[in-house]
Length: 264
Image (spheres, rainbow, N blue to C red):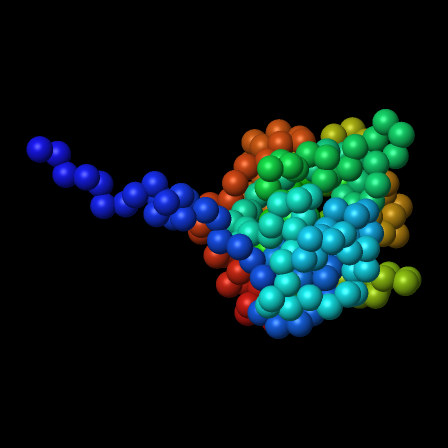
């Protein structure tokens, strides 16, 4: 005679139910949503203002209203749950803004992110004319590490107008003071290919922004024709197609976390 299973239907349903999330102490409503992993503070403030959030069964339109451990909070009529942290590499296409609202006929980075994963936010930015690797997650602390620091290398492949000279490479490596941008000194500059009127280079930054890189070459009378970020710390763009994502490996996730912690 077969034995009855140890778990009855009620027990199985309880085991399968997601863990609800509630703030551990009093805080603002938008902040609570952000801490639960549903987006940045700006994004969660908008969620509240759009009437998508209820507290104790009533729509609350005030992002600063106080909620606490006893509050029942729901988003789009679904209770807040403990979100699984997800981490992705994304290949941002050129002429796609990293943030902001979609313009007529133009997509932004958030349009490419999977809607079934709440709270995904890019870590840092790329300007609209720069393509390549962006890191994306719904872990705000990890995003802070991934946005950059002196120990987190960022590697770019760049195509510029004209032929660059060895003297110019030396000037770049020595560091340059740029008006309104300060001092910037790349960690590495390698010439990959020289054509009749173009040069392709590899450039690695410790600190600095890709906008500053354009200023460097402009100061040397070269226009930046193409700029693509191909590596952030241990994460490499590889053959990931523009507009596509891939999950990060555990090693990549922890590599970013450890580098960020050392920079803090």
